[in-house]
Amino acid sequence: MKITNVEALKKIAKEVRKGIIEEVYSAKSGHPGGALSCADILTVLYFNQMNIDEKKPNDPNRDRLVLSKGHAAPALYSVLAQKGYFDKELLQTFRKIGSNLQGHPDMNKVPGVDMTTGSLGQGISTAVGMAIASKMDSAGCRIYCVIGDGEIQEGQVWEALMAASKNKLDNLCVILDNNNLQIDGEIEKVGGMNNITEKFLSFGFNVVNIDGHNIDSLVDAFTTARQTKEKPTAIIAKTIKGKGVSFMENKAEWHGKAPSEEEYKMAILNIIEES
Image (cartoon, rainbow, N blue to C red):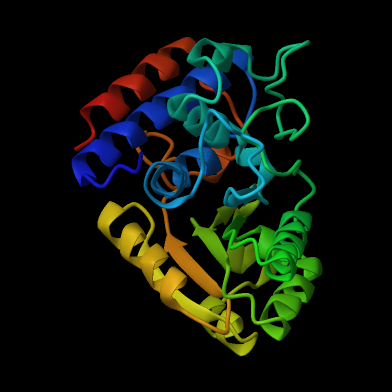
Protein backbone atom coordinates (compact mmCIF):
# COMPACT_ATOMS: atom_id res chain seq x y z
CA MET A 1 0.00 0.00 0.00
CA LYS A 2 1.39 3.39 -0.98
CA ILE A 3 1.60 6.03 1.73
CA THR A 4 0.59 9.49 0.55
CA ASN A 5 0.47 11.36 3.86
CA VAL A 6 3.54 13.57 4.07
CA GLU A 7 3.75 13.50 7.86
CA ALA A 8 3.61 9.70 7.81
CA LEU A 9 6.47 9.60 5.31
CA LYS A 10 8.50 11.98 7.46
CA LYS A 11 7.95 9.72 10.45
CA ILE A 12 9.16 6.70 8.48
CA ALA A 13 12.23 8.64 7.31
CA LYS A 14 13.07 9.33 10.96
CA GLU A 15 12.87 5.63 11.73
CA VAL A 16 15.09 4.94 8.73
CA ARG A 17 17.68 7.37 10.08
CA LYS A 18 17.56 5.78 13.51
CA GLY A 19 18.13 2.42 11.85
CA ILE A 20 21.18 3.78 10.02
CA ILE A 21 22.75 4.99 13.26
CA GLU A 22 21.92 1.68 14.99
CA GLU A 23 23.64 -0.25 12.20
CA VAL A 24 26.83 1.77 12.05
CA TYR A 25 27.12 1.99 15.84
CA SER A 26 26.57 -1.77 16.27
CA ALA A 27 29.17 -2.56 13.61
CA LYS A 28 31.61 0.08 14.84
CA SER A 29 32.13 0.86 11.14
CA GLY A 30 30.23 1.98 8.07
CA HIS A 31 29.22 5.07 6.14
CA PRO A 32 26.64 7.14 8.05
CA GLY A 33 26.99 10.48 6.24
CA GLY A 34 25.93 9.44 2.76
CA ALA A 35 23.35 7.02 4.11
CA LEU A 36 21.62 9.76 6.11
CA SER A 37 21.62 12.10 3.10
CA CYS A 38 19.62 9.69 0.94
CA ALA A 39 17.20 8.48 3.64
CA ASP A 40 14.31 10.69 2.47
CA ILE A 41 14.85 9.71 -1.16
CA LEU A 42 14.68 6.00 -0.39
CA THR A 43 11.72 6.45 1.95
CA VAL A 44 9.64 8.14 -0.74
CA LEU A 45 10.65 5.55 -3.34
CA TYR A 46 9.82 2.49 -1.25
CA PHE A 47 6.75 3.78 0.54
CA ASN A 48 5.18 6.10 -2.04
CA GLN A 49 6.48 5.46 -5.54
CA MET A 50 7.70 1.99 -6.43
CA ASN A 51 5.51 -0.86 -7.60
CA ILE A 52 6.79 -3.46 -5.11
CA ASP A 53 5.49 -6.05 -2.68
CA GLU A 54 7.67 -7.07 0.26
CA LYS A 55 5.87 -10.43 0.29
CA LYS A 56 6.97 -11.03 -3.32
CA PRO A 57 10.53 -9.66 -3.44
CA ASN A 58 11.31 -11.49 -6.69
CA ASP A 59 8.15 -10.53 -8.59
CA PRO A 60 9.36 -10.17 -12.20
CA ASN A 61 7.00 -7.22 -12.75
CA ARG A 62 8.26 -5.18 -9.82
CA ASP A 63 10.03 -1.84 -10.14
CA ARG A 64 13.75 -1.97 -9.38
CA LEU A 65 16.09 0.14 -7.26
CA VAL A 66 19.82 0.12 -7.87
CA LEU A 67 21.82 1.77 -5.08
CA SER A 68 24.85 2.60 -7.19
CA LYS A 69 26.48 4.34 -4.22
CA GLY A 70 26.59 0.98 -2.47
CA HIS A 71 28.44 2.22 0.59
CA ALA A 72 25.12 3.83 1.62
CA ALA A 73 23.85 0.29 2.28
CA PRO A 74 22.78 1.17 5.87
CA ALA A 75 20.06 3.40 4.37
CA LEU A 76 18.84 0.69 2.01
CA TYR A 77 18.82 -1.97 4.74
CA SER A 78 16.97 0.33 7.12
CA VAL A 79 14.30 1.12 4.50
CA LEU A 80 13.89 -2.55 3.60
CA ALA A 81 13.50 -3.45 7.28
CA GLN A 82 10.90 -0.71 7.76
CA LYS A 83 9.07 -1.97 4.69
CA GLY A 84 8.99 -5.51 6.08
CA TYR A 85 11.44 -7.35 3.86
CA PHE A 86 13.20 -8.69 6.95
CA ASP A 87 13.17 -8.31 10.74
CA LYS A 88 14.36 -4.94 12.02
CA GLU A 89 16.47 -6.67 14.69
CA LEU A 90 18.78 -7.89 11.92
CA LEU A 91 20.01 -4.32 11.47
CA GLN A 92 22.16 -4.85 14.56
CA THR A 93 24.08 -7.56 12.70
CA PHE A 94 25.31 -5.07 10.08
CA ARG A 95 28.85 -5.91 8.95
CA LYS A 96 29.12 -8.73 11.48
CA ILE A 97 30.72 -12.03 10.50
CA GLY A 98 28.04 -14.37 9.17
CA SER A 99 25.48 -11.61 8.62
CA ASN A 100 23.79 -11.15 5.27
CA LEU A 101 23.83 -7.39 5.86
CA GLN A 102 27.37 -6.64 4.80
CA GLY A 103 28.96 -3.26 4.08
CA HIS A 104 27.66 -3.27 0.52
CA PRO A 105 24.32 -4.77 -0.58
CA ASP A 106 24.25 -8.32 -1.96
CA MET A 107 21.25 -9.29 -4.10
CA ASN A 108 21.88 -12.97 -3.42
CA LYS A 109 21.64 -12.60 0.34
CA VAL A 110 19.23 -9.79 1.15
CA PRO A 111 15.56 -9.85 0.07
CA GLY A 112 14.60 -6.60 -1.63
CA VAL A 113 18.08 -5.82 -2.93
CA ASP A 114 17.82 -5.71 -6.73
CA MET A 115 21.52 -5.36 -7.52
CA THR A 116 24.81 -6.06 -5.79
CA THR A 117 26.77 -2.80 -5.74
CA GLY A 118 29.87 -1.26 -4.24
CA SER A 119 32.29 -0.51 -7.06
CA LEU A 120 31.38 3.09 -7.78
CA GLY A 121 30.17 3.86 -11.29
CA GLN A 122 28.95 0.37 -12.08
CA GLY A 123 25.43 0.47 -10.65
CA ILE A 124 24.15 3.00 -13.16
CA SER A 125 25.28 0.76 -16.03
CA THR A 126 23.27 -2.10 -14.55
CA ALA A 127 20.24 0.16 -14.14
CA VAL A 128 20.45 1.13 -17.81
CA GLY A 129 20.58 -2.54 -18.74
CA MET A 130 17.52 -3.25 -16.60
CA ALA A 131 15.62 -0.39 -18.23
CA ILE A 132 16.50 -1.65 -21.72
CA ALA A 133 15.40 -5.17 -20.77
CA SER A 134 12.08 -3.86 -19.44
CA LYS A 135 11.51 -2.06 -22.74
CA MET A 136 12.40 -5.16 -24.76
CA ASP A 137 10.05 -7.34 -22.70
CA SER A 138 7.29 -4.71 -22.55
CA ALA A 139 7.30 -5.40 -18.82
CA GLY A 140 6.40 -1.86 -17.81
CA CYS A 141 8.92 -1.86 -14.96
CA ARG A 142 10.43 1.41 -13.83
CA ILE A 143 14.06 1.46 -12.83
CA TYR A 144 15.39 3.86 -10.20
CA CYS A 145 19.09 4.39 -9.61
CA VAL A 146 20.62 6.41 -6.76
CA ILE A 147 24.10 7.70 -7.49
CA GLY A 148 26.50 9.87 -5.51
CA ASP A 149 27.97 13.17 -6.62
CA GLY A 150 31.49 11.96 -5.89
CA GLU A 151 30.63 8.86 -7.90
CA ILE A 152 29.88 10.84 -11.06
CA GLN A 153 33.60 11.53 -11.37
CA GLU A 154 33.74 7.99 -12.80
CA GLY A 155 33.78 7.90 -16.60
CA GLN A 156 31.61 4.78 -16.72
CA VAL A 157 28.72 6.83 -15.35
CA TRP A 158 28.67 9.06 -18.41
CA GLU A 159 28.97 6.13 -20.81
CA ALA A 160 25.86 4.69 -19.17
CA LEU A 161 24.02 8.01 -19.41
CA MET A 162 24.80 8.22 -23.12
CA ALA A 163 23.29 4.76 -23.61
CA ALA A 164 20.21 5.74 -21.60
CA SER A 165 19.62 8.80 -23.74
CA LYS A 166 20.28 7.00 -27.03
CA ASN A 167 17.73 4.33 -26.12
CA LYS A 168 15.16 6.88 -24.94
CA LEU A 169 14.78 5.16 -21.58
CA ASP A 170 11.83 7.07 -20.16
CA ASN A 171 11.42 4.19 -17.68
CA LEU A 172 14.74 5.11 -16.06
CA CYS A 173 14.99 7.68 -13.25
CA VAL A 174 18.44 8.57 -11.96
CA ILE A 175 18.57 10.29 -8.58
CA LEU A 176 21.75 12.16 -7.75
CA ASP A 177 22.33 12.42 -4.01
CA ASN A 178 23.99 15.82 -4.27
CA ASN A 179 25.36 16.34 -0.76
CA ASN A 180 28.51 18.02 -2.18
CA LEU A 181 30.93 15.94 -0.08
CA GLN A 182 32.99 12.82 -0.69
CA ILE A 183 35.60 11.11 1.45
CA ASP A 184 38.31 13.67 0.67
CA GLY A 185 36.18 16.81 0.86
CA GLU A 186 34.01 18.97 -1.41
CA ILE A 187 33.33 17.47 -4.83
CA GLU A 188 34.32 20.66 -6.68
CA LYS A 189 37.73 20.71 -4.97
CA VAL A 190 38.41 16.98 -5.23
CA GLY A 191 37.35 16.29 -8.80
CA GLY A 192 36.40 19.66 -10.25
CA MET A 193 32.79 18.50 -10.56
CA ASN A 194 30.55 21.49 -11.27
CA ASN A 195 27.73 22.54 -13.61
CA ILE A 196 26.05 19.21 -12.89
CA THR A 197 22.64 20.24 -14.27
CA GLU A 198 24.19 21.33 -17.57
CA LYS A 199 26.11 18.08 -17.83
CA PHE A 200 22.98 15.95 -17.50
CA LEU A 201 21.11 18.17 -19.95
CA SER A 202 23.92 17.86 -22.48
CA PHE A 203 23.64 14.08 -22.21
CA GLY A 204 19.99 14.23 -23.23
CA PHE A 205 18.28 13.91 -19.87
CA ASN A 206 15.20 15.61 -18.55
CA VAL A 207 16.51 17.28 -15.38
CA VAL A 208 14.64 18.20 -12.20
CA ASN A 209 16.39 20.09 -9.38
CA ILE A 210 14.92 19.76 -5.91
CA ASP A 211 15.55 19.84 -2.17
CA GLY A 212 16.23 16.16 -1.53
CA HIS A 213 14.86 16.37 2.00
CA ASN A 214 11.50 17.86 1.04
CA ILE A 215 8.96 15.04 0.79
CA ASP A 216 6.51 17.01 -1.36
CA SER A 217 9.26 17.98 -3.79
CA LEU A 218 10.45 14.38 -4.05
CA VAL A 219 6.93 13.13 -4.80
CA ASP A 220 6.43 15.84 -7.43
CA ALA A 221 9.80 15.10 -9.04
CA PHE A 222 9.08 11.38 -9.33
CA THR A 223 5.68 12.22 -10.82
CA THR A 224 7.37 14.43 -13.40
CA ALA A 225 9.82 11.63 -14.22
CA ARG A 226 6.98 9.18 -14.71
CA GLN A 227 5.17 11.58 -17.04
CA THR A 228 8.23 12.39 -19.15
CA LYS A 229 8.36 10.43 -22.40
CA GLU A 230 11.13 9.62 -24.91
CA LYS A 231 13.98 10.50 -22.54
CA PRO A 232 15.31 9.45 -19.12
CA THR A 233 15.04 11.75 -16.12
CA ALA A 234 17.73 12.84 -13.68
CA ILE A 235 16.58 14.21 -10.34
CA ILE A 236 19.34 16.29 -8.83
CA ALA A 237 18.46 16.17 -5.16
CA LYS A 238 20.33 18.75 -3.09
CA THR A 239 20.98 17.04 0.22
CA ILE A 240 22.97 17.39 3.42
CA LYS A 241 25.54 14.77 4.30
CA GLY A 242 24.71 13.46 7.77
CA LYS A 243 21.19 14.95 7.60
CA GLY A 244 19.31 14.71 10.88
CA VAL A 245 22.36 14.48 13.16
CA SER A 246 23.63 17.95 13.98
CA PHE A 247 27.28 17.08 14.58
CA MET A 248 27.47 15.00 11.39
CA GLU A 249 25.82 17.45 9.02
CA ASN A 250 28.06 18.77 6.23
CA LYS A 251 31.13 17.07 7.72
CA ALA A 252 33.25 15.00 5.31
CA GLU A 253 34.80 13.18 8.28
CA TRP A 254 31.47 11.36 8.76
CA HIS A 255 31.66 9.80 5.30
CA GLY A 256 32.98 6.56 6.81
CA LYS A 257 33.13 6.74 10.58
CA ALA A 258 31.16 5.13 13.40
CA PRO A 259 29.89 7.11 16.39
CA SER A 260 31.10 6.49 19.93
CA GLU A 261 28.56 5.49 22.57
CA GLU A 262 28.06 9.12 23.59
CA GLU A 263 27.76 10.23 19.96
CA TYR A 264 25.34 7.40 19.26
CA LYS A 265 23.03 8.58 22.04
CA MET A 266 23.28 12.18 20.83
CA ALA A 267 22.54 11.12 17.26
CA ILE A 268 19.40 9.20 18.19
CA LEU A 269 18.18 12.14 20.26
CA ASN A 270 18.88 14.55 17.37
CA ILE A 271 16.84 12.44 14.99
CA ILE A 272 13.93 12.14 17.42
CA GLU A 273 13.86 15.89 18.08
CA GLU A 274 14.32 17.04 14.47
CA SER A 275 11.22 18.82 13.16
